Image 1: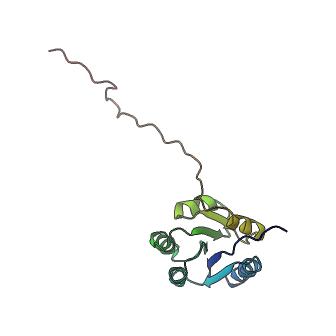
Image 2: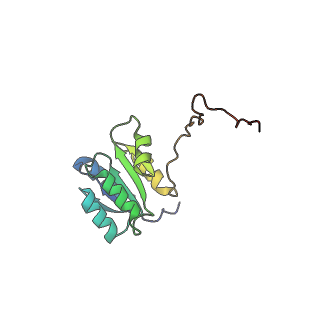
Image 3: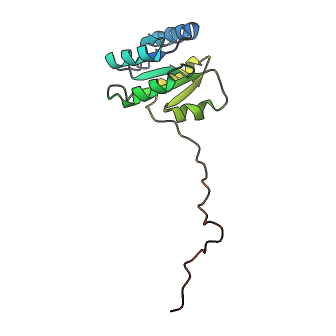
Length: 150
């Protein structure tokens, strides 16, 4: 028999009842301790009282920026893995990374994918490298300093 992974404290901040209920069922069945908050303010309060290992946050919440910024700044929660939940596939990972999340999952969440993510060590999402254009001298500017005759 394979040893069970240690129980994790997971907080879900999402106002979508059916989606949240499915996540709670999945996470509890896997042996996790799960908390739920319907608003960002309530979620930040719960996270401060009982710091979670992982926080799943719906990206459509109206106070998303305040949620993420508050969780990242609070010493009790800054080490938690932040996972964005979204139903919008286009640019989801890029937007989640820019918003400060560690990972992004599409709704409806694939249970196996979520459980596999929770078993991994927390590490921030990687962003594709982009090339930045080289700085150019203004038109008419000399490339090298000119020597003047004395």
